[in-house]
Length: 296
Image (cartoon, rainbow, N blue to C red; front, side, top):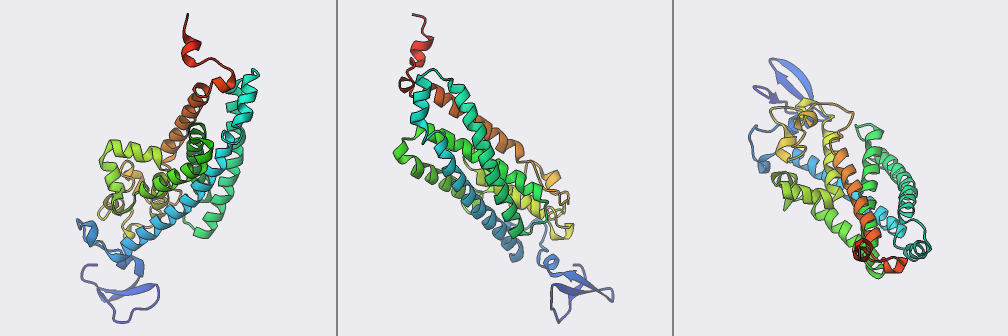
C-alpha cells in the first residue's frame, strides 16, 4: 500500500488507512489479499489460499453429491429395462428408436433434477453470479454424468452395476477434481494428454473451475483476481485457456467450459449407442455384426 500504514485500532470489515494525512476506509479483504508480484504459491497470503480452498471444497462436495445421485438414477435406463429391451428388439422393434426415446425421456427427467438442485444451491451459496449460470452448470453436469451412466449400464453386469458406477464417479470426481495437492489445475493444463483424460472422466474438474472463475471474476481488481499484475487465476492455474475473459471483471458468469462438457456428453451417448447396437445381439435375436456384414 505504498507509504500507507495501518491505524492502531482495527475493527469491523473496514481497515482505516492513512495516506497523505487522509484516512481512507479500505475493506479488510483487500488488505489481506495483497501479495508480492512474482511470489510463489506457498508465499501467497493465508486469506487468498483460504478463499480458494473454501471455494474448491464447496464445488467438489456439491458436485460429487449431485453427480453420484444422478448417475445412479440414470442406470435404470438401460440397466433395469434391459430384459424388456431384448424382448422388444427380438420382436422386430427398432433399436435406434428405443434408444432415442429413452434418451429423450431421461433428459427431461434429469433436467428437472438439475433445475431444482441449481436453484437450491444458488440460494444457499448467495453467489454473485446470476442464477442462470448455476442452472446451465448443473444441466451440463447432469448431461455429462448420465452419458457415463448409459455406458456403464451397457458394459457392466447388472449385479455389479451400482457399486462400480458409484465408485468410478466418486473416485474420478475426487482425485481428478483439480482441488487436491497432488493434481492441481496447473498440472492438468501442463499436459495435453492429462487435460484430455481428466476432462473425459471427471465432471468435477469442469464444475470446480466454472464455480471459482465465475465467482471470483465478479470481484474488483483490488482483490487480485481481475488484476493484470497479481492475476491470481494464472497463479492458481485456473482458466489458463481463457485468461483474458476470466480476468475481465463481470458478474455475468464464465461459460468457457460449456462446450467441453457438452461434447463429452454427446460423445458418451454415441459410445452407448454403439454398445447397444453391437453387444448382446444374440439376445435380441439378431445376427452378429460379423455375420451381418459378411457377404457369404
